Image 1 (cartoon, one colour):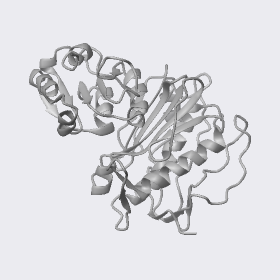
Image 2 (cartoon, one colour; image 1 turned 90 degrees about the vertical axis):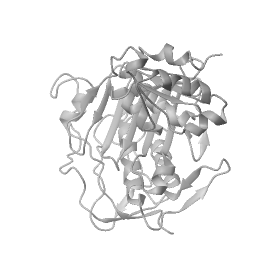
Image 3 (cartoon, one colour; image 1 turned 120 degrees about the vertical axis):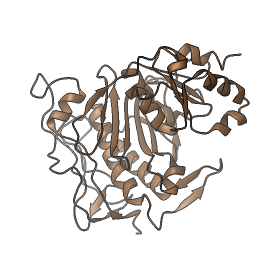
Image 4 (cartoon, one colour; image 1 turned 180 degrees about the vertical axis):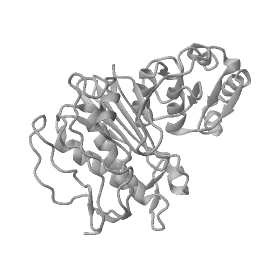
Length: 350
């Protein structure tokens, strides 16, 4: 069987007990913080060659919700060197921990393929690109979810599915920013979200080529790590309250033209202090950090927005569609610090 991925693999730059405590908003050693996180002794794993086999034989996992989970399905297997150490000691019902584990899996697959000379890029029916890393990563994430939480629904960019109106569902974008990925631009990320009754409650954005990760869970705040091995910090949106003082971003100006709302976008940008095109996941994360104040997308899919919705909301901001409905599935979006939201929406309402 041909390997899905071959190459040197840097580690996922995460985690330790203090980090685990902080992401839950409590000091290490306090209360019921889970402290038995696997020891990540280095910021990056030692270089080595790995082979990721999407249908590799795996040890049987314990029943979901009991004891340790099985080894990562479809996970990079070390031929030389080692793969990222992943914590297997936290309770199986810890959804944020599972989402972070999924991000580790994605990083171990996508990062070795970034700028790979043999990267395979194809064009989907909608003319957007897909690489072998996109499909390999999503397949591995689905396999892990099938082992850990087999009753949960899954929606992914490459393999489809749906988010149920009731119950639990995972929303996966194995590589958000595939055009950047395929051109060697490091601004891309894996987006992972858990929805409950249709609303995102956990979100992780992992951008290993940038050395960054963002995460949030309902009621636990929004967090980021600024560099491999860095101490996580809690983030919040800006306090900018006037459009004239605001930074606004989008992904592609031409998309506004395609949706016949270019005039609305230009009217908004005329009112703002600075206009940028950070694009894709990054602009939403920057809104959550308070680095910029607004991000507008005239076209977006559910897998583009589910993870960043909970991140932005936990940071104190808002994410709606252009009609003002709080949803990640509206086909477009406005992300803001909250204070500027209604003013921005006003430019797109008839």
